[in-house]
Image 1: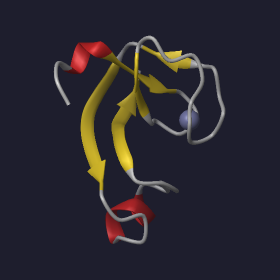
Image 2 (image 1 turned 90 degrees about the vertical axis):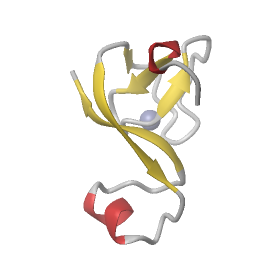
Image 3 (image 1 turned 60 degrees about the vertical axis):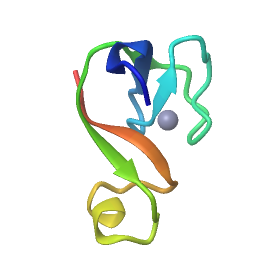
Image 4 (image 1 turned 135 degrees about the vertical axis):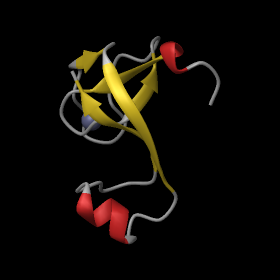
Length: 66
Ligand SMILES: [Zn+2]
């Protein structure tokens, strides 16, 4: 991951995608926010953190979408 500002967060599942993307690959939503805080990397979807944040798939996620 390079500069955080090159990414936007899905409002539905908080998955981070590059700004050129139009659709969230995790939940299919097209609703994104450029304003988000915190970054969590899920490397195992069965981990405690993934369960806590209700994350269904590995990847980069925003902790909070503003
Ligand atoms: Zn999503």
